Amino acid sequence: SQPSVDVMRDQGFLQGMGIDLADPNKWGDETDPRIVGNEVTAGNEEGGLKAMEALLAKDPDINVVYTINEPSAAGAFEALKAAGKEGVLIVSVDGGCPGVKDVKEGVIGATSQQYPLQMAALGVEAIAQFAADGTKPAPTEGKAFFDTGVALITDNPVDGVDSIDTTKGMELCWG
Image 1 (spheres, helix red, strand yellow):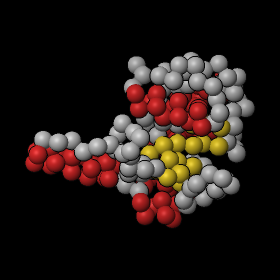
Image 2 (cartoon, one colour; image 1 turned 90 degrees about the vertical axis):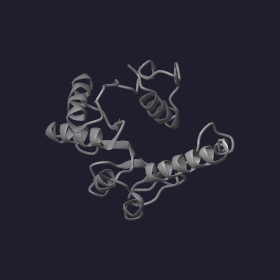
Image 3 (cartoon, helix red, strand yellow; image 1 turned 180 degrees about the horizontal axis):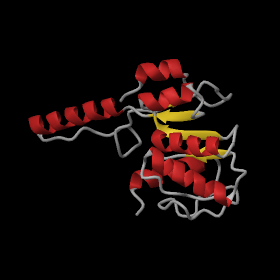
C-alpha cells in the first residue's frame, strides 16, 4: 500500500535532494545508490525505531534520514543513539509542537511545518460558501488545491534555503 501522502512526501524529499525519480507516483523504486532503502514506520515512534534498525543493518554508515513524520523521526533517533551513531542528519515533516521541540533538542535537524488549523478553517469557509450559494472557492492560483503554506523549521539554517527557527516554529506549531 502506498498512500498518496506517503508518496508525495517521499518523492518531494527526493526531488528536493536532486535525486532522479523513477515513477513519481510510487516510492521505493529509485535506483540512486545513495538511497539505502525505504521502510514503513506506521507513522509512529516504534515503527521509526524498527525501520532505522533495519536500515542500519543494510548500511551502518547512513548519514541522512528522511522520515514521514516526527514520531517516526524520534524512533529513528533512538535507534541511531542505541547503535552509537552520532551526527546523522534526520529531517521530517509536519511541524507539530512535539516535533519542533525535537528540532530544538537536536533530535531532528529540520522539519517542514504545515498548518492544519488553517486547512480546517479554509475547509469550513468552503463548506459555508457552497451551502450559501452552491459555488466552490477557487484553489490557490496555479495549483489544484488550497495552499496554506509550509515553513522549514531549523536552528541550523543553510544559506539559500528559507527557514525559520524553533522559537518562531513553537509560536506557529499545533498539537
